[in-house]
Amino acid sequence: MQNTRTANMALTFSDEQAMILDSAKSFCRDRSDISTVRSLLNSKTGFSSETWSDLVSLGWTGIAITEQYGGSELGIGSTVPLVESMGRHLLSTPYISTIIASQALQRGGSEAQKANWLPRVVTGSIGTLALLDNEDWGATATSCTLTADFELQGTKVMVNDAAVADFFVVLAEHNGAEVLVLVETSSLPSDSLSDKILIDETKRACNVTFNGVKLSAAAILPNSEAALRDSRLIGALLTAAEATGSSAAALDIVVSYLTSRVQFGRLIGSYQALKHPTVEMLIATDSARTLIYHAASVVDDQPLNTDAEIACRMAKAQATDALLFTGDRGIQFHGGMGFTYDCDAQLYLRRGLWIQHQYGDAQHHRLHLANLLLD
Image (cartoon, rainbow, N blue to C red; front, top):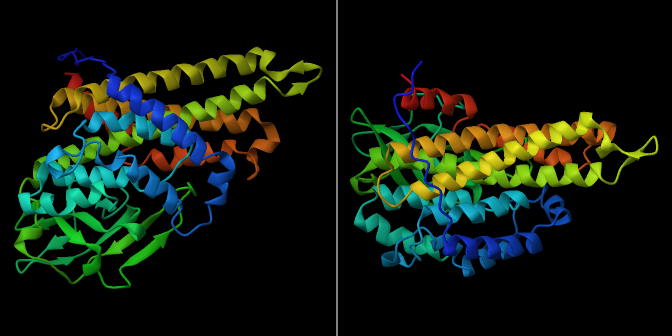
């Protein structure tokens, strides 16, 4: 096979991103140490409302929203350092879900939809994207329908942060075309949400039944096609950033253990059988970090072009593999203790198993990359 296209490999790191990263590092470290993470595993929402309020007060929910609607208009790329830091400290909030949903509105919504909801997002309202009718990211159609009289019929599965969402952006079929529709939580029947148990206990998701929800023509996002495409790619980028942070944290745990555990009179980190895989973890994690910041350099507020699509897909494929590898090695290197619930290494493998299927796994994205890059 021959290369038919050379991808844009721009990589920039702005002063704004550096400042955001410094702020995010200290905030996430202080608010989400491992004992705090474990204390929230059995909570209803999986996150601290106080932490969410403080995060909103810092202006993070408005980073990618235009100034017209109360945001700081720094662009979607400026959220990547935040999400990477959240992943590194396993700080789970509805931030990623809300950013993706608000981007769908900003890129595809009507002026009335944007004016109504984007300022609310800036001040802490939570949104989420409801895309999947099943768990297959390769599916090419949706079974959720918006009838001629604007009534929704259908169920969406594994909707992230649905239990705390103030609004949903829902993929549905209407008049033979796929559209995104804006649904306020207040319009749902009380029994619409069904909690799901996830392998990553720091995360929350529900199946959501939209049967009988009455809407109007004004609920449809006018530029649904472009918004849907961009939202999927932005979702892939942000979950890749989170995975990269978690992979770095898993590597830190491995290095800490290898440089403190003594066996047969030697630090176990002195054995080549453990050194070499650790170097592979570092290379995989650094490769993922390079790719997420490359993607952050080429995505902008305009409809995402081919370079941006390539960058987002490459980032998600690499970050998925990196976290699965570091999470798995983290458990293996801890020996028998690694397989216990008390070992913190298992939290990162659980995160990897969950995150690989968010907005497509590595195989899904490499299939699309083959079509984009190869003859």
